[in-house]
Image (cartoon, rainbow, N blue to C red; front, side):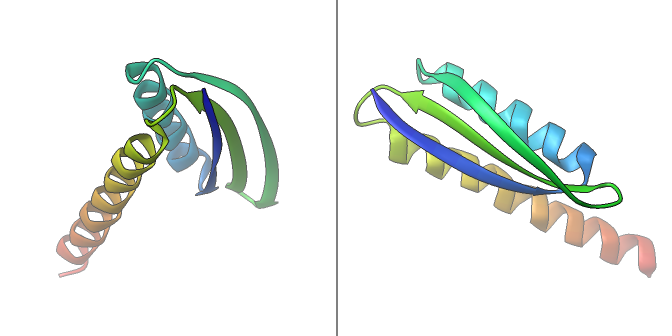
Length: 86
């Protein structure tokens, strides 16, 4: 098994969504979440470090799939914000 972690930062709602997606991806690849550590950095803003393991050779696939989700979420959020402010 390959161990890794993801560093998540944002509002509590954003962190919850990212954590759930990461958990689903790790499970999809036959791995498991081991633990997490959280730190509140401001009102409604926090950091979360999530430690997990996946089968050997799958770590980069998991990271890439998760990063694609985060990137797509940011593009959607920016597009939505631009739409709302027009």
